[in-house]
Length: 241
Image (cartoon, rainbow, N blue to C red; front, top):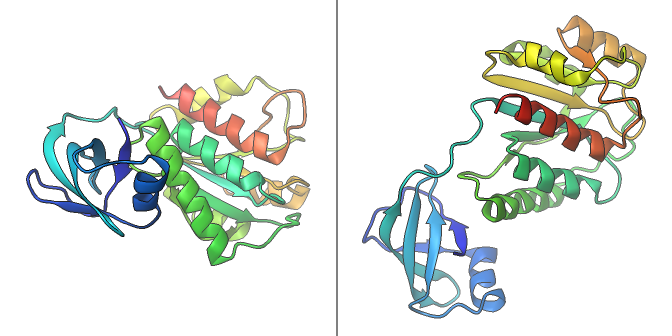
């Protein structure tokens, strides 16, 4: 069944609105009609079965039935700080990180970042992609997209996380999964730092290590930045299932 997010807390029998791009998708792309059934998720992650009552510029739907608890999200809240890549590569990272269950994605600014454009328009695009991916994969809430942050600012806040992870191509080559299992045992939150196309400099890696980062290799090959972000997210979240 088609699913949409709505803002606020939904009550059975109280009409609510689907607006903007979602309303356009409902009418133009899905060719919905009055009386059709859809599923909505409110700001608390609750799911409802609804009937479409009105289709104008916005859509009005009537919640009729609460769908009991959505699939639980990961107990570990993983934040991925992704070095900003060139072109549309961040679109790929946003979609796949959302599907994997990453809680938050932070565009990361570091020494070797070539792309530094994080205009409001780009952030809005990434937020739309995260929202769409959440609906597609059945998440109870969209992945949060934060404003860009410099590496040193993130390292200054490292103590807020139970684990700090940095894939780095010059780290000792050890199997990463045992290292992750040890680092994430009992952790409720973790931050992963992924460098841009040129990777992290030795100085940046040293500062991260001083801040308590676990330096690890994701295998014997050097991965593209967009691949590294997705591989790290998958490894972390599969480790704590």
